[in-house]
Length: 112
Image (cartoon, rainbow, N blue to C red):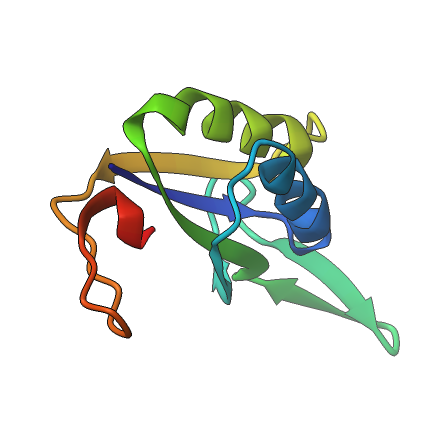
C-alpha cells in the first residue's frame, strides 16, 4: 500500500475528490493548512494598506491506496488540481507498512 499526500489549492478540492471517486478511491482525509513554496506568499491590499501574506492557504490530502492503483490515483490528483500556475501544489508518495480498521480489527488492504 502507498500513502499519497497532496497539497493543493483549496478551490480544487471538490474536483480532486470527484476525480478520485471516478477511479474508485473512496476515502481521503483533507486538512486546511498554510504554507509556502515557490509562490513565497503574496501581497494584498486592505483599506489602502499593502500587506505581505507569507503563508498561503492550502488543503492537504492524505490518501492510502493499493499499489496497483497508485499511478491512476496520482494522475487523477495531478489532472484535477493542475491549473498551470505557480502554487498548484505538490504530491508526495511513500510506503505504508500496515493499516488496521479500528472497528473490526481487519488489517492490510482490506482495511483501506
